[in-house]
Length: 387
Image (cartoon, rainbow, N blue to C red; front, top):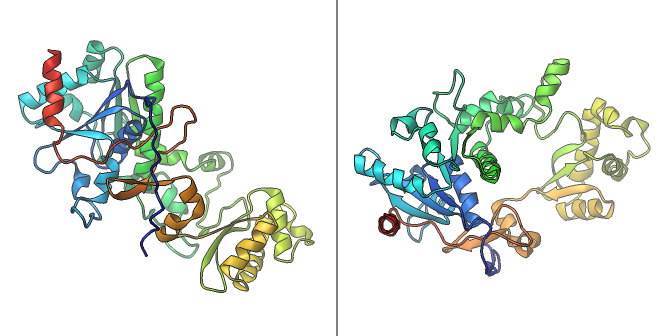
């Protein structure tokens, strides 16, 4: 079912953007590095995307394609707000042009394997000596140092080695990887945050961001729990070890609802809804965790006896925490998503709006992803004018 035509309205946002004075050279490929540069572009940075001749960035050929123009939707998201410049970095001329561009930049984003940037003749220490305020953001799988530094950087490896896959899945099943580019998207946000911290410092420096350590940040207190007590979290499906109930439950009409009780008052209300509000065993986090199976069975039975609409209405009336489990069709049609323009139309393609709302200097998506090399002549002409 296509989304309603009113979805994704793009309200005009005139005026200067907060990063309009920032130039970023995006030398990275695929999602994590380009995602970092994309977030900066959304807030006004002049992002110049460097692509190889012929095929350009890998995401131009990855995933679903827009039936209108046969361009991949991943590229349209990752490339939005960026100018596309084709340089052949296997040639002296291409390297020379890249050096010229870096000399005009505030930020260089790259995700080559450690040592590959240096092999191109772009040694960070030398670049910083020549451009003392340059920020060089390096996105890799394992970081610039350590025994794994030279390994290929794939999100799957980080998801496995961070402990994420180990705790993800059903109790009687195997470890599961996320079915989305979770690590890449989170690392993109971490890299954008770290880049702006470095820019704000006013000191030229290298920002070392990697997939493994970013995913490990998402594991919360699990590293601490293991160090302090030897605790290893088992796979609990949609459950979490410290709060019950928490999960997804099937309603009488076959639809699904998600329920959480990670605040004590909310948990008490949920227990009252399912008819167990007077049971002292369920009056604390510890008690509910100890009787996990019984609590989950009570909630599952209560939900199973009601339609999704009935579950949501009763939960809202009781100030309990419940939400429908959406597919993308329902996301696009949700009134809250529509009211806040969470999704916008960019070049005829529906995609996520900017990541955060700034009250005085909001970001916006200025233009859709560009054709390969669409801005090469313009950007190089700008360089020649500066000589």
